[in-house]
Image 1 (cartoon, one colour):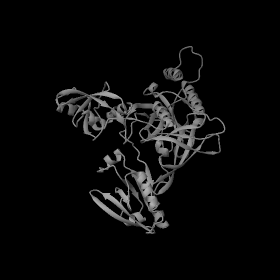
Image 2 (cartoon, one colour):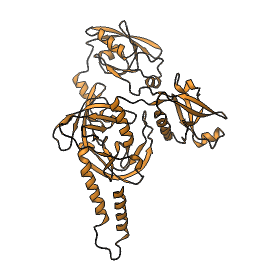
Image 3 (cartoon, helix red, strand yellow):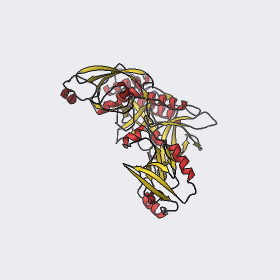
Image 4 (cartoon, helix red, strand yellow):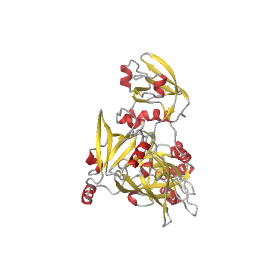
Length: 456
């Protein structure tokens, strides 16, 4: 920070003009320029290029991104979306011609953070970390990454805003907004202050001059949990909407702040404690809730997610004209990303998590959810659709993904087998015949035409 303030003072002085009798000094912009060059040269050896072979349904494509070396032993921070569904990940380190095979230690969709590990015979150049809490709007920063495969690219800008909630599905982050360029391929690279400290992991660009970065404090906390084996987050079990001024005024409480409960999930901690649809939550665990806009709901979600599962907290609500307080035992957040499995007859399934069952309005969480069917495959010829729920394969009942895998093994080598699937309120009996029409190579090429070769 001292360097930033010193440069700012010099720049202000140069804009005001030379002081009478002052000795000749280099213009302040040169001091800033030298500082940027110095920081860029110091940090670039810690910024890596990542290539991932990603499975998208029945296609494999190469995606690219960036990452930052967090430890000299080869631990790397990047984005979840850079390596999501990756079957193979390689990392290029500045100064080395070798491409390192990377192991995915863990990923977290909700914060868009992933942790990789590579093995190097020599210590690697690890970055220095700061804190996003110290950042101020207007402060100068550098974004370093590999946009469009152009390694070691540096862009310069300012912190445009803090605490941005982009209302992305299944995301808990409060992003740093910056006008330092974050283009395709820069995802996972560092945002750096003029002390040379990493203050964020760049996540996404949204038009020229608008980029969003994950605070480094969040990234390091998540990385630590992923190294330990996983993340457990608190769960209340409600959906909600913001309480804006007009709605509060309609309720006759113009000065009331809080969040409106839209629904209470059956069997959830909220239901067990007695919360109801229409309640207005005003305080949670002693913290006032203020959600005048939908983007404010992110703060509420992060607050709940940060409570240790099993802990009892006080939730204060306004119900009609009465303030009431409930003791809620916070649960463990259901899995966000369902596990997947694929068959050899052209379809993939997912486990039915609570989130998946709710989002697809499934009557039960038993079975295997069909999320992809390849055109022209034996499964498609049999009439299997995405959205079906497989309940049985031949005589084997399918209650979950493990049952599905076992049942599929039982029919390996059979020329035909029967799938019993639930489609809405109906039961479908689908006869799968191996050797049904396969997609011809020419058709595959036609399907691929016009599709991007890489993803961001």
